[in-house]
Image (cartoon, helix red, strand yellow):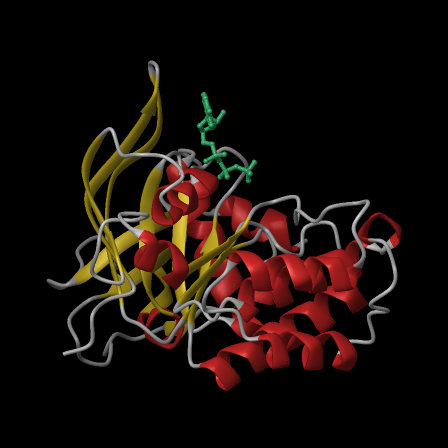
Length: 297
Ligand SMILES: Nc1ncnc2c1ncn2[C@@H]1O[C@H](COP(=O)(O)OP(=O)(O)OP(=O)(O)O)[C@@H](O)[C@H]1O
């Protein structure tokens, strides 16, 4: 059986009195590109830092590739972590970064690193401080991947990049995943990017996991139901209500079909990933469905 790349059980992290992550329970299979989305302060960086072993849980459990994060040198080598500000050393050249990577990492794949640097057109003699934001991100990605980890974790890798640089970075990332057979977890505010590159999704808000699963399953099983007011007051078992919006004459519901069977209700329509994510985010904030229309307007 495949060991999950990330499994957590009631994972909680508090900073003093503030709870940054509340009882997160997740089970993510290996070989996926996982998108972690949620508003500012939702707890995304906290979850990623726990997975990288940079911080310890307050309570609950977390296993990465079946083991405690950062438990030993093997576990550290198996997980690559790129923090939010794509850390590179300004005074070192691109080539220096590769030399340093080689010296520090027993599993370093130098051929891979040098080939990739050439393919993405980075000048090895250029100081990292002189690279553009997109080039720095590409360098950080190459270094993380050249360690040949089993899991790559990125905290908002594309946040500072323009659309072209973002696309190039994500394209590169997808090529790495295919070439190196690794798992990736990345956080992002850009649901369109997540939809394009990820196959698994975690929605975090208000420090809690709102929904998680394979993106294809989630989009196939979330529906908008529209009917005359009063006709949608009771839902069959296994159809979970996520949001409701009523006018005098009409009711609109967003529901999650967890029955495992196709939804057989009149007026049911699937919703896109963005609407689904927004519905969960609004629900977590205590807002209701009309904001969906407002967001689209
Ligand atoms: N070291 C810390 N000490 C105290 N509070 C912290 C610390 N790190 C994070 N927090 C708080 O925990 C909460 C979650 O923060 P976190 O950085 O995990 O959110 P995030 O979803 O990554 O946000 P963003 O999208 O803005 O990066 C926030 O309220 C934040 O202020």
